[in-house]
Length: 112
Image 1 (tube, rainbow, N blue to C red):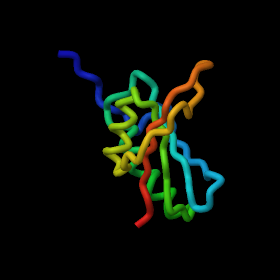
Image 2 (cartoon, one colour):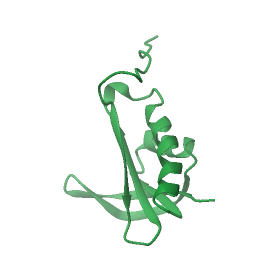
Image 3 (cartoon, rainbow, N blue to C red):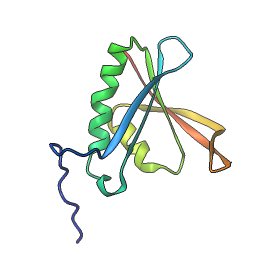
């Protein structure tokens, strides 16, 4: 059995990124994240999204924070669901990737 080493949270190197952008619609933001391949599967993305989402809703006065995910990206879907996001629908041929197009699944969390 291959075990991944424990996540180093107090190190001095970045293992990923979470970003929040304000959408053109009032009180709506977008969220994105990525983790370097060698650090995936250890909960860092879920922990980061769980921290950032409530902060973004409050600090940016958002009513809605959404994320768009490729349908085949099950890991990102799991991260969003684990952080309280709900899947709302599918935008067909919405994303442009490597010269082609892909659908996007829409996830969101709303302010309470």
